[in-house]
Image 1 (cartoon, rainbow over the protein chains, first blue to last red):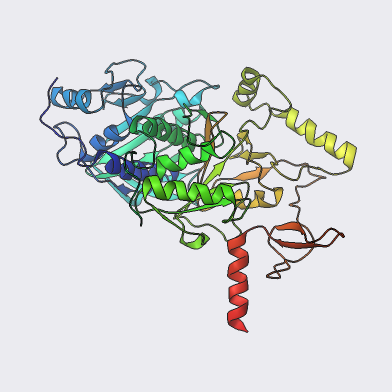
Image 2 (cartoon, each protein chain N blue to C red):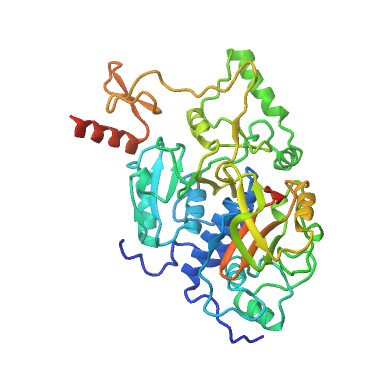
Length: 187
Length: 284
């Protein structure tokens, strides 16, 4: 259960700065935010994903993680969260499908899972066209390395609103978010 | 920036409480207008004094933020002054009375007159987050009504206003629909302020400490005041102009000046009023 990889250099202020980046990303879907990563992320996690886990995950939030034993030991030590496969509040698993994750209920939609998705790159340029709350007219977001068929799955998932899954996209030290309310058009 | 009080975590709350509140805020933003339950903590001031707003502010605040706190529009009332002093002491953040300079504005029952920008966050103190509670006291039942978007009861209430008074007689805490889905209490702001919530560039967060609920309206989100085609929503404002700055568009407070019926009307937003007076003096 030991890890040689550190958490945040300043646990209080780095978590605050990361949270504000995530809040900004969630409030303005498609806008790419830069986060202050921990000094060294364990193998299998991008600096952004590591920072998001340190900021939001703890003993109260079961995590589904498939990023290798180093990353598992690291989250167990720094976040102290239970690791499990079904019913996790946070999911970091490239094999996870939106429609298989817990969407909450109509009465308690806030119980819907948060999916942390590692992608190759994030850019505010034409690719996906996002509309919905948080967006004045439309935001362009170019995502390299999203799972195949993601946009179609997103539309199916979004039809369940207010139930649904919220996504935090991570690439290097950059993040963008897709709250369940946002509509994605391909192209 | 003053040195923060020692012996407290930054911004008073412990880190696990902040994480819990931050997760609630993120879900609130993802589901605009939906009330997310959270584990409201005891704060060093009683419920009813803005503990919900303070917990939200404490969870988002960073050392680079500039905090403004208003109570009914005023920066200089007890509640506003003590909350500003609280965050100066436990977080060492800079505070301001100028709306334009603030990055986080905590408010009790007003929205500033000056339009807010994308770089600002507005935190509302909410006494009763459930818009339906006077119509349906059972929480299990109101939760179901929100799940089904069954808001007929609220329309009936507004209709009864029309039948009794000839118009919708609600002048504050006027219910709104957020993003066409959730009925939401805007907190007891005057109905005059409701249109400012619609497609506001700033993020709006709501904290109810005693009722243990957090909700949010993301930027640029549609916020409609409930009404009828033949009785459209009308923001109410006293027809006078401000006795101090002459404003004819701001929301006014009526102030008694003596015991013989003397009264004046002044801006409720003290910063707005002071800025207008300063501009007028500079022009003279």
